[in-house]
Amino acid sequence: MRIWRSLADVPADLGPTVVTIGNFDGVHLGHAHVAAEARAAARRDGGLPVVAVTFDPHPIAVLRPEHAPTIITTIEDRARLLADAGVDDVLVVPFDRETAGWSPQRFVDDILVGTLHAAVIVVGDNFRFGAKAAGDVRTLVDLGHDRGFTVVDVALDGGPQVWSSTYVRTCLAAGDVEGAAEALGRPFTVRGVVVEGEKRGHQLGYPTANVPTAGMAAAPADGVYAGWLRRLDEPEAPALPTAISVGTNPTFDGDVRAVESYVLDRDDLELYGVEVEVSFTARLRGMEKFDTIDALLVRMADDVDRARALLLSPAQ
Image (cartoon, rainbow, N blue to C red; front, side, top):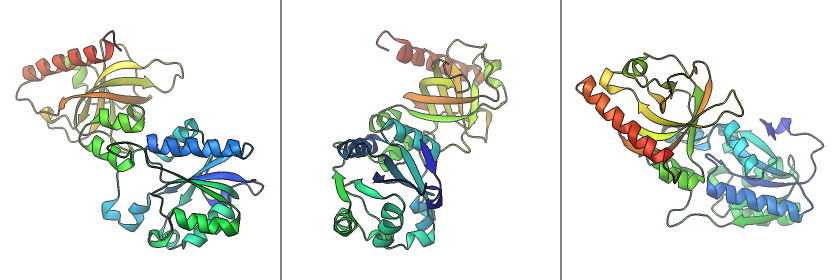
């Protein structure tokens, strides 16, 4: 897959394409459905390449910065997930106030027709574009009559809750990683490089791989979770069952929010400086501050037992 970071990066000899457009943050099941429809349209048109158009930063971060959403996936992760869904290339449109002021016609002429040579455009049926969101699917259809492309609009997925990036963010903010996974079609994951912490986990008998949340696209609400950890420097490395703490370690008055992963029954892992992926399976409890170390140890032992039962039961 190619990621083009500007219109100028798109090859001048690019032929006709099938284009799908959206923020695609999280690449949830609704996004995957739209991408699959784009791939189906590409097959009907003789195997045209599928190009996804997305924006960076998120348009709301430019138009209403005080309401800017937490980003679920980086551009690179978004591209990887879109590739899994059937997209060939991604065009990232740098979004600023000037771009926000483009009319629907200019957006179509400069990007979809002039740069990507769209033969078919596939979007969700709530798609809006152009200055003040003046364009919609009907606008695309009308413009396509003169510019030689057709439009496929895809009904929104999900029910009773329609899948959306906003819904996924709401689930994560509540610690509902199961709900987020249902909308995403996969467990929610975070990635980061393991750093050296205070080593309290090792002293307490539960050594953890600590990844600060600063710089992460998103993380679930503070609490304790069951999930899996996989090191990314070894392509064949297995996912390891893990009890995960997200938060600032309030019992010790910590101030650095981190994802701390204890791989069940392992104290031999050397992960400092290693990029890891942590996936969340279930929430065990909210974050608590304990009055004594003994009380903390009792709860940690229970957390580990519950994580083991969830992750390593015969049904798993």
